[in-house]
Image 1: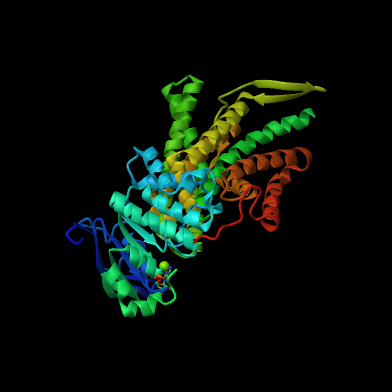
Image 2: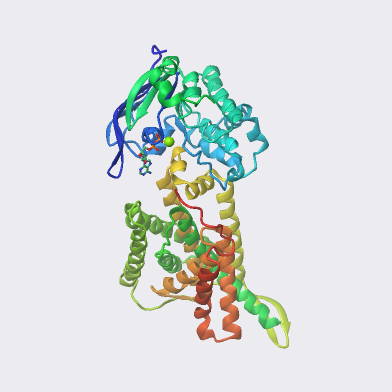
Length: 243
Length: 304
Ligand SMILES: Nc1ncnc2c1ncn2[C@@H]1O[C@H](COP(=O)(O)OP(=O)(O)O)[C@@H](O)[C@H]1O
Ligand SMILES: [Mg+2]
């Protein structure tokens, strides 16, 4: 896998909320075509890392390279237009917009042609969205909102897809469906995916490689299978968590 | 009945002007959650630019009224929009992320600054202009009372309806309008979708100022006199209209404008004209006490 070109490189990145340090020198790599997962307890700094990659909060120290370009100090919308899309924590669907409008907002980062094809592709992945085209985002179920958040990210034709806890609060059957789609995106389209999860079992089973974040620092890394087999991981993140 | 109808026509005309200005208040509130107290002055500047443009065209010998109107309309919109854009850049953007009252105080400062700026440049005396349109339609005649809809009133109402329809389409149907609404609902997420939030906010000010410029042109024509202080009262009434309709709501601003215009016209006609402003502001207070979300506003969603 590591023979593929380096797509995202995070080097000694620190991030703050006011005086509070949420990331204390995080370094990690994502290579093209990989699924990389980041697991860690609540409050470890996972969401902060995804947001810092997107420039909000901007990194206070360290560097972030995307496809070789330094994006550390760039504005969020510019970073996104380079090809990094995020399905953020809490999904953040635009509640007063319809499903189709939410999807069209996602195209802001992409070229204007081929929107119809992109729509057809995401409806293929999530057929339920097609039935809900003109329903307001705020009235969707949690699972549907999560699907919409991923679909909206895909509408920007990203080269790197950031997913923040897509399984949070969803029924097991919906979780399986969403993880199925994540795997399919990677296998069929070669989409590079950086997946943040508390649901460590599913994430590690799916990912090629994984990192463990604790108190804003990377404390472990390895292949998905290797981490899954690790005793310390099992004790800290997996006990009773096999859903 | 005839008298009533006449007041209705007059109120509608007034309401058109208030509605156009109210859109600027409501859109800015929607996107950055502040009341732009300098918006009334933007309207005043629009009126001045219109009057100056008419004077220049007059000197240049442009005799065709439709031609003059179109040119003045465009000039007023372009220059006033530039003022709207500049005010946002200088007075509000640097304060973004600061404490909540900071931009509000800055807006009041801007409002005072713009009044003085125009007073310095144009003098404190009232500026007057002869009527551009004369005549109108007689809608009905009843016991010797004629209900007329002047050509100017017709022009104001038709142009307002067209602008409001066009503006609604822009917000509802275009990518630009979607970006605008996305920023209203969740700026952080809008940026994550690739939207340039700062640019979208600028554009909101530009659009609001453009509509206020049209309102300025209309009052220049309707009243024939303007001074550097007209933005205060009209701005406050348009703000009342926006609150009555539901601050943040585009159809609310339009409806609120019309209602305030009608209330003012009927109050002046049937009660004491000297207290017509009091009527409008009593409405503001009543709405704020009993229905702060206004007629068409939705309950405030917590902004994260
Ligand atoms: N907007 C914020 N303001 C202040 N502190 C925050 C904010 N968001 C997160 N934090 C703090 O930063 C730390 C990391 O949070 P977060 O990145 O959300 O962790 P995770 O996603 O791993 O649960 C936590 O201590 C959290 O309390
Ligand atoms: Mg999180």
